[in-house]
Amino acid sequence: SPGVVMAAGQGLVSWTLPATLVEPTCFHAAACNPSKQAPAIMAELIALAPFGVAARDAVGCFPLHKAAGVGGPSGAELARVVAEAYPEAARSRERMRGALPLHIAAENEDADPGLMVPLLEAYPGAARLGMHPPATRVVTATEFSDAEGAQHPPLTVVPVGGEVIEVRVPPGGGAVLLPPSSAGAKVTISMAECDGQSVCGTLQVVCA
Image (tube, rainbow, N blue to C red; front, side, top):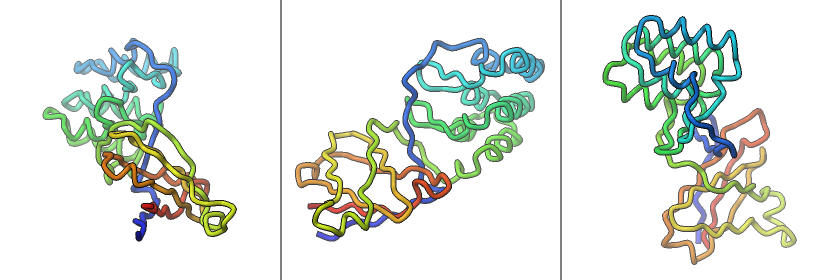
C-alpha cells in the first residue's frame, strides 16, 4: 500500500532520556524560588559550580524546566540566567508529559510576559512543537539509495503498543517498514531534529 511521506526539519524533534537521573539539586531548588533574590542566588550558584544547571532530576527536569514555572518579573530574570548558562536545556523534554521548558512557561498562570523571551532565544523551534511522551527506542532509517536495491530492503520496525520511536534520517532520505502486525499499535514515529546535514531528510513509512 502507499507509504506516508513526512519531511524532517527544525519543526520536528525527537529525543532520548539520559541514562543517569539525579535527585533534585540545590540548582533545582533555587530555580523554584519565587523571591526577588532568586536570580542573584542562581547566578552565584552557577559561578561557583556551573555544571549544576546541566543536572536532571528523577523526572527529567533541568533547572530551566523549574524556572519556567516561576511567576512574576523575577521568574523571567531567573529563566534568563539559567538559559544563558545552559541553553541546551531549552531543547530537552521532561519525561512525565514530554514538556519543553516553553510548554511549562506557557501553562504558568503567574508568568511574566518576559518569561518566554529567554526560552525562545535558546530554542526558537520550541514554538512549533507539542508535548509528547519520551522516546523508548532509537532506530536509523535505511537510506533511499539502499532501500531501492534488493540487497538492502527498508529497515523493519516492529513496534509495541504505545511505543514512541525516534527515527534518525540520513541527509538523502530514508525508509522504514511497518509490518501488518503493527496495525493496531498506537505508535508515534517522529524524526530527529536537523543537526547540520547529519539527520535531515525525508522519511517514508511503508505499510506492508
